[in-house]
Length: 165
Image (cartoon, rainbow, N blue to C red; front, side, top):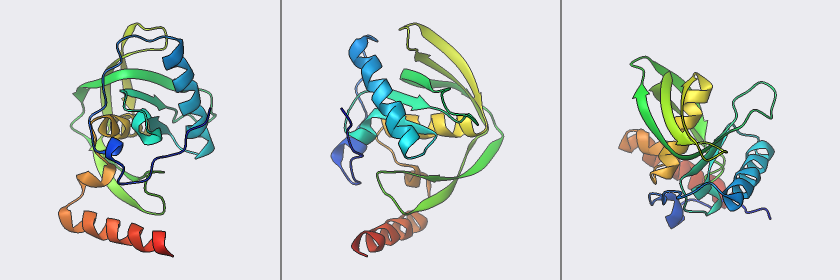
């Protein structure tokens, strides 16, 4: 089963996702579907709400060669570096626009992994940026929510014009 990306401003993109109680075969199948959708974009991460599933599930693969996806349930940031990293971010839920966002260069994240075990892992660079981007989705936030109101309004106006084109 392949779900499409829900278009902005779908309500599922603005609500905090529900915690995952247990990692079972249904969760693993959803992760597999998410990895396939992420690779098809192509992108470096995807959160379940982006495909209309209101669960705290995310996948990230910022590797040079694909196939290194980290599957996360209930990810939470334990520590973030003071050093920031700028990266141009976008979303398949609002195609055609992007913005440069500054986020911590490194983060330590705790999550349930594919085996259902609690894991703490350090992410650096693009991996860290993507993990933070996905956690934002799980909290009902989009990358452009980190912009000033003026920049956010301009970006949304540009996206609206592109959608009518």
